[in-house]
Amino acid sequence: MTDVHSKATRSKNMRAIGTRDTAIEKRLAGLLTQSGFAFRVQDAALAGRPDFILDDYRCIIFTHGCFWHHHDCYLFKVPATRTEFWLEKIGKNVTRDQRDITTLMAQGWRVLIVWECALRGRLKLDDAALIERLEEWICGGGQTAQIDTTGIRPV
Image (cartoon, rainbow, N blue to C red; front, side, top):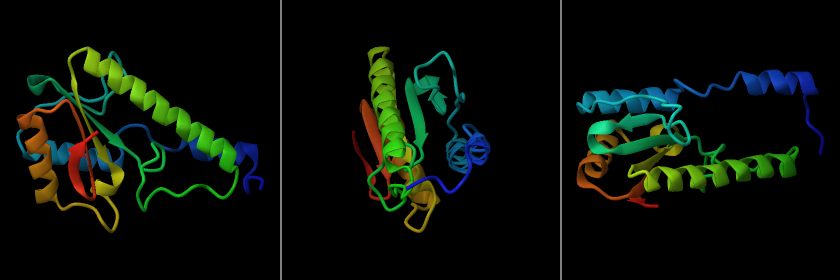
């Protein structure tokens, strides 16, 4: 099936998708600030340009959109048009994510992924639940973990 938009329209739509200060990043930044954590944002010198860097705890937090990073949840839907193109593009994102996490861990960073579904949508976690899980991981250790609608678990 072909795309319903012209190439120029599709290109314009794709350029409009933000890569920083997204709604999920703003929500997570507010929760981190509310909990008293000092952080930096999007350091281009680090692999994957992490969304949040907590130097005091030597940890990195990524906020991943469920569609763009292929999370197995209700927010991920395989596109009906140009399916092969989208699955290839998303697959490259997943491969890049794995490479970046491996690189960061080799540099001594701990890595947390917070999925979009935990931050927005009908099954999102409330602020108290998110703060509890963030504090648990940041202060408690563990090399890698992820937070989604089911809570926190190792990657």
